Amino acid sequence: MTTPYNCRQVLDELQDWLHREVTPESAAAIEAHLALCAPCRAHTEFERRFQEVLKRATQPEQCPPELRARLIAALRREAGG
Image (cartoon, rainbow, N blue to C red; front, side):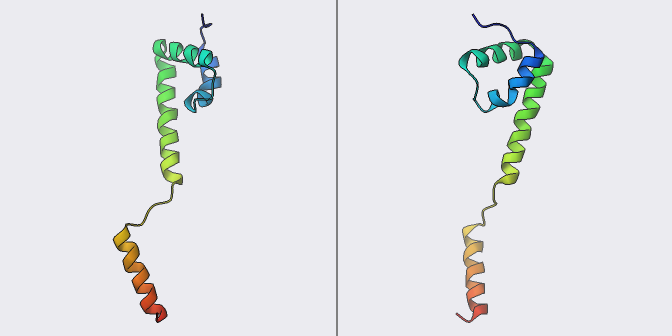
C-alpha cells in the first residue's frame, strides 16, 4: 500500500512525475492525490501546458519544401550559378 501524498509532496515531485522519472510507488501516490485534489490537478495541467508551449517554442520551424526550393534557386541565380 502506498502512503498518501500531501500537496507539498506532489509539488516537490511534479516535474519528475511529468517526465516519468519517479518510482511506480511515487507515481501511484501522486496520481491518487491528483484524483482527489482539484488545486493540484489545476497546477499540474498548467505545468503540462506550459511545457508543451516551451517545447513548441524551442523547436526550429521547418521551411515548406516549395519555398526552400524557390529560395535556393533565387540564391543560385543571384550568385551567378
